[in-house]
Image (tube, rainbow, N blue to C red; front, side):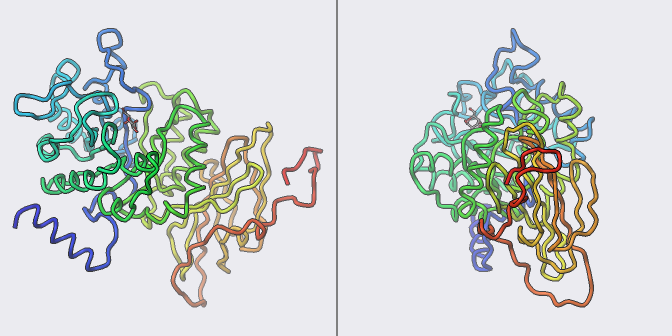
Amino acid sequence: MSGGTQWIVMGVLLMGLGVCGLENGLARTPPMGWLAWQRFRCNTDCVNDPHNCISELLFMQMADILVNQGYRDLGYDMISLDDCWLSRERDALGRLQPDPFRFPSGIAALSDYMHKRGLKFGIYEDYGNFTCAGYPGILGHLQTDADTFADWGVDYVKLDGCYSHPVDMDQGYPLFGFYLNQTLRPMVYSCSWPVYQTYSGMTPNYTSIINTCNLWRNFDDIQDSWESVQRIIDYYGDNQDDIVPNAGPGHWNDPDMLIIGNFGLSYEQSKSQMAMWAIFAAPLLMSVDLRTIRPEYKAILQNRAVIEVNQDPLGIQGKRIYKDKGIEIWARPITPVFQGHYSYGVAFLNRRTDGTPSEVSVTLREIGLSYHGGYAITDLFDSVHYGTVLPDKRFKVDVNPSGVVLVRCEVVKTTGFGGGRPQLIEPAPQSSIRPPFQNHLFNQFGQQRLF
Ligand code: GLA
């Protein structure tokens, strides 16, 4: 049986079994790694800026740091090229080739460098005539380029969508996915298909997208600012009913790169991005200069407990369950599950700018956590243990301006009660949450309360 036939037969079998989503066996938890774009962009000036230009050296240096500084062992196990690695011309046989000055060893050698260090290697291309920065795209060369990627030992393909018509993407992205599968080399497939369609006024066909791609971009490119991070958070909250159900093992919404450690986010805002990306079950693709990152930002990226929420094996994306006066509460069902009750990652996010922490107080039941045995609650950034909290007991956190408190609420195993299927919590109607401090405008220090 040819590779292609095998692929089709497998697809039919999986459809028969009622399996939804791309089942290439990859990305069972959100991909983690390092991507060049947000920090290094299209800097091709290796003459004047050899240290920061897009060249094989940059990727090799980042790979060494992933390995030597503990990132790989925490799960950040992939290094990926983004735009501007290509030569302007294909070779005599019509194959893609890297810029010879900046990638003198060739892409196969770079990929090999990653593999020797226990890392995966990612590449960037574009479904259109050109990449967004104007380098050759794959249109007209789909099979050749899929084969070339396989020959080079590529493990992850980010396929952008500039210079193509969004209507054509409904055929084009699956067709390139077909050619990738036909190579029989496992390659994670990252698509930009829905974002281009949404921006052109189309409604993306998510059924097709989740059956084709391991991850996909839904929204704008991230920029180096808190404003940009907040816009993404809002998009995910405002559109959660449409996009959250599409996430699961093997197929993820991609809110774009982590910008932690760059220029635009404060320490608090960096924790907020990390926490929210954990709630989103988002790919954790760092785009930062790992050679110069300050230790406190590195510690955020390396926070094992937060990574564990992000990588939870259930793969259920979290939702915004409360939003009022600049305070948001987000919750994500995670393991362990006991007698039909999920544990949860819960993020209390403070979008306010008045310069003092906001006290947020809720009962767990108000935010949908109702297991009678209660939840063992741990703060994931400050290592505070709150002990077991019963559903009707009031639970209070202080959240810094533009900061977050992220807690893990682990269902406490008790005996003697019946089970049932896990019930997902749904966004609570505003009226069912008692706003913290509804009745008291000022606290004991004379500070104004929020609610
Ligand atoms: C698009 C993508 C970005 C990046 C650039 C490169 O804008 O969304 O993530 O890959 O192209 O040009």
